[in-house]
Amino acid sequence: MNSPLVYLNGDFLPLDQARVPVLDRGFLFGDGVYEVIPAYAGHLFRLDQHLDRLRDSLAAIRMSPPLSHAQWRELLQRLIQGRSGDLGIYLQVTRGADSKRDHEIPQGLSPTLFAMATPITPPSPEQAELGISCITLDDIRWAHCNVKAVTLLANVLLKQQAIDEGSQEAILIRDGQAIEGSTSNLFIVKDGLIITPPKGPQLLPGITRDLVLELAAEAGLPYAEASIGFDELQNADEIWMTSSTKEVMAVTRLNGQPFGNGQPGPIWRQITQLYQACKERLRLGAETC
Ligand code: PDD
Image 1 (cartoon, helix red, strand yellow):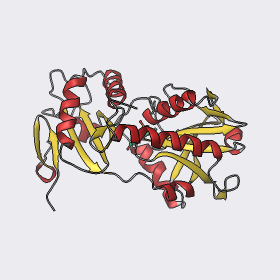
Image 2 (cartoon, helix red, strand yellow):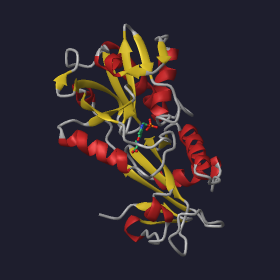
Image 3 (cartoon, helix red, strand yellow):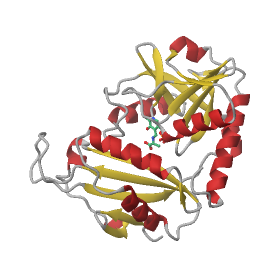
């Protein structure tokens, strides 16, 4: 099989030929930020929102945007040109390669820009109907989880612990509050009200999260951005986890027990239909959805 073309520092080249110096600060310190952007039938999903978040992540780590939104758009469109099927674009910006290893931020480095598009398989309707199993774990991450930093060791360990315990995702608990998943945002439904924790340094401002709130507002479904206590999580009518690649997944098992009746709830079904309709509009050529 041919190695797919990736973008690295101005060039499009086969993945197996892409090389980064070992003194790159992304490699040495995890000093960089990233995005994961779906593309459906050649259409980039919520690109402006992803690029706005990238700009915010870069600002938070004291980097200026290496490219404008228009330049990113052109580059990413070229990356997916002629590729069929659903793709996930991984885009990473690190502070670049230095001539030595030193914590202090060097001046005048050229950032390392990398992007690749790989096939993704969003959950099928049958998989989505099964829902996912989650466990709750202490949130061991740092104090700036709103930054989409490549420094993901805590997330990796939390995710693996969930998998080791037969689940797909960990719901992270900090000071008695349920915050988000190791790779996804958290929603609950209680008495018809959709609740997700408010944005802030404790969680990633998910693009899917925002879309779900927009869809709820358009459909007249009541929602609130409010903290979710551990008890509220356990006593919720529905729990969902959202991300660009997994979309909106209902939690049907929690901490080794069936959650509720062990099936996705009615409001999840409504939101999922709206989400799929939005994707379909994009596929058919809508500017955005
Ligand atoms: N992760 N919270 C965390 C900690 C995440 O890592 C992600 C996504 C989300 C959901 O964000 P969005 O809706 O913008 O995808 C929330 C991506 C998919 C990843 O790291 O691969």
